[in-house]
Length: 228
Image (cartoon, rainbow, N blue to C red; front, side, top):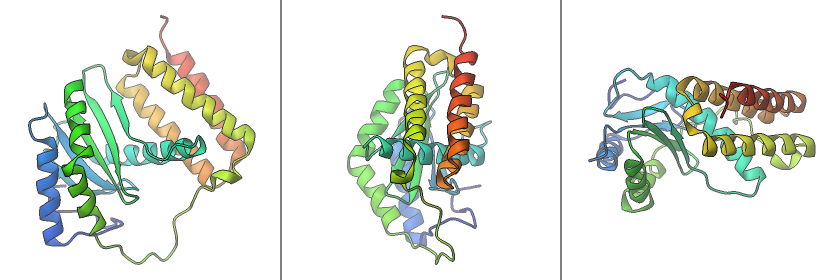
């Protein structure tokens, strides 16, 4: 999908002027970062635009996984009283995938190759470039929705399910901190898929499935970790 062509089902649309501004902002956000690529999606993972498409990476699949991961993490964070989340995934080859929510409408997914680039990226997004990106997304037009999207009412989540979700989150964070090299691309892909399935179960209030997914994911993670 070349720059200038969005997914036909995107949840918001940009004018020609807005798209030109977006391309310029994304280009400045990634300027000078080592082997950086960026893609802006809506919150469902449908691509709005791409800057510097990386070779050998399925961005459409990555965007969908990022959206599922963001939605799940947002719900988990909210259940623990956190209001804002940003995500950084690290691979063994030094590649890092950063997911940055923009308002409640979009996600910026940036791939970089070193820790310094991540720090520079965060500084830019916390500054004027982040404000400009927010302004572009804020100015986009929304199509009329026939059916509202499903919502997660966190207060309705049973206590035992919340406990299992918190335990799973703590396990993932602990393992990523202690054993980052064990989180290979295959492990991260399966973990993102598990998070997406968990989010769907929470959205549709399928509490038994949500609890089972938490237990299964935790068991799989522990079993997949090589001996220390």
